[in-house]
Amino acid sequence: MESESTFSTLPNEILVKICENMETPTLLKLAGTYSRVYQECSEIIKNRRKIYTDKLKKDLLSGNFDAFKGDIQVKIDQDIDDPNILIITQQGYIDSLAPDTPFILPNKKYIINSVPTYAGNKWIIRSTAINISLIDKIVDEIISQGYKLRPI
Image 1: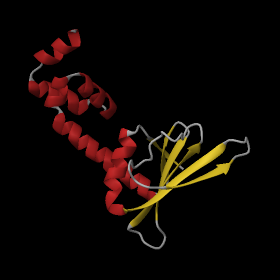
Image 2: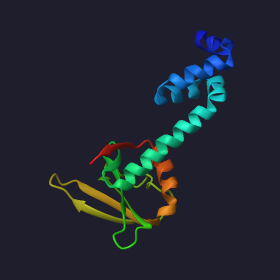
Image 3: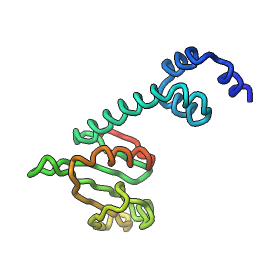
Image 4: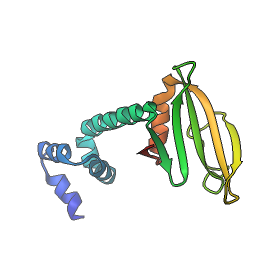
């Protein structure tokens, strides 16, 4: 492949400069495709991922954003009585939130409720309370499960 040979012949310093000037999504995609890009730019990738996850954490805890994937929404709220407790809610129509759809925290027990909607579909709501110290794990799961952030 011509691209692979181009990356293999570039000096390390030039490749790192190229990585520094790439937008994060492009860099991550390229690093996933070419092992040399990943190897040479791993520090840049690590730093950008930290910046991204820190922003995601801040946005989710602000209460002004939720995470979504298709018809599924995940919201994080701090408990009114105890700011060290987070209430995680995952909701969606029964078709999109089938029993095999993972909860945002796999292996975590949750309460499930269903609410009929105007169209006769059921709106499923799953929720649990966790300690705020698990926020990094939640953010990792949101990213790995393919959720995107949006303002609410």
